[in-house]
Length: 260
Image (cartoon, rainbow, N blue to C red; front, side):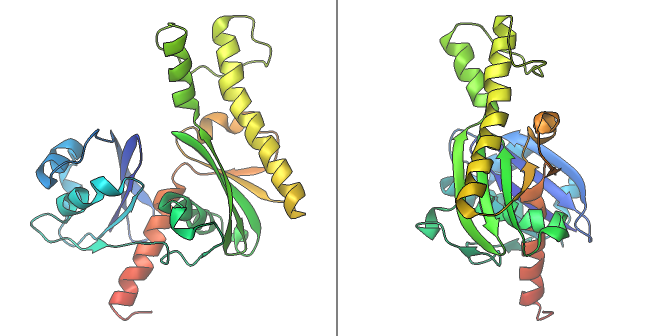
């Protein structure tokens, strides 16, 4: 078994994989507002015993570097569980982003996870749309990461509008039509449907720029929610970051053991 961790801006997700990479269990916690000690991290995550098996290596993808060291020590624990260190050279992808060091590991993990989950993408041009705290598009051509776009995600948009309009918490409601006839319908149309149509429009313009058709791959917490609104062929898997991290961490572990 293996554990993979995504440490994001607003959420920490921890997945337990079996030998084939299938996710057996996944837990999500809020990202703390400050760096934690290893003991504080352990209390914050509150992982069940199955996550603490001694011979279970851990692969971590973090976009909050200041918090990573304490998390690594917490997950290593007294058992000295092996932490698989991943950097931008780990993913088998050529980075054409400028500068390469500014491309988030989460985007690399999702890009590799798409190939792991959908093998027919190998060698093709595709775009991963991560619907999370931010809505992030990452374009991959063969095994080269070209770039993409970043915008505020659906959840933070709703929160910001709620606060500024003094509406209280706006429920996440599926937009039934583009023409909102109430304030709630207008918000869901503008934020949710607007985000989806914006993604589709950007993907279309990227295709025109590249001169080739791309497969759209949805991931992230809102992926399954927005899927019915997408008006083009696409693949969907909420957990591509974990799947990509599992594959690359497994390969790194095999190399360490001289198996590949």
